[in-house]
Amino acid sequence: MTFFLADSKKKLKRLFASRVIRSYLVLMGVFLGYLLLPSLAVPQIGERFPSETGFTSDLLGPPVGTYFTNLEKDEVVDFYLDNYSRSSFLNLPLPARVIEHQPEYASEIINDMHTAKNTSFLVEINQPFRESLIIKGYGEVSQESREEKSEKQIKKFSPREGESYFLMITPYQIKPSFWQKFISWLIYLIIIPLVLTFFWQRLKEGGGAIEKIFKKNNRQPNKQK
Image (cartoon, rainbow, N blue to C red):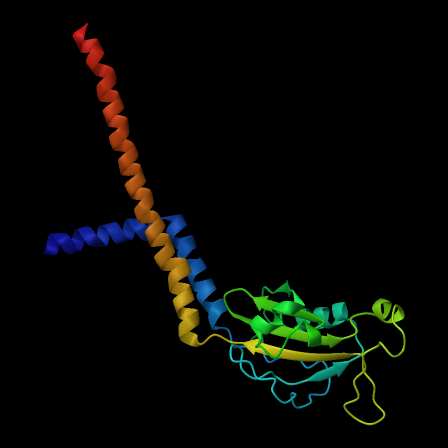
């Protein structure tokens, strides 16, 4: 028993002496820290209005609210991307990417009520492995598109008397639980590498066995001569 423990300690010592293993442990810690950073508040693009009746998604839950703006679509996307790529903890930078969804997918991503008829664009601001914002925009996406329409064709929103906006924004936030994030960490940095390592070892052993067979077959004719 004592010999087994001593041998195990030596193996572990050699293992952790490897630069590759030490670097991988650091990567595991950094990735876990990234996953556990506090969730961001949804950026406020203007005054928040109560969401419209029926705007509750079975998949995403209720929206954060409804906002009205005269910004163009690209400006709206840039606003959310800029304000959703910094952690509230020490203002650390967070990876964030823009995923464009086709407006007709609103019925699948949000619910059956939301179709292309009331969706001008559907954009996801995604923090890989962490969380996402689904931004649903309805209205005029740019000044260029407004110039191509008659006054009657241009969509306008008046949440209050005397106010007029060209675009209505409805954001939804997707926040995985702590355990969902922890399971992601286990899968991507522990389980998958272990499985790949196991199969790589089996392939190496299989390759070694095949190599031995070829060497043995190559030697037999020489002996016969």
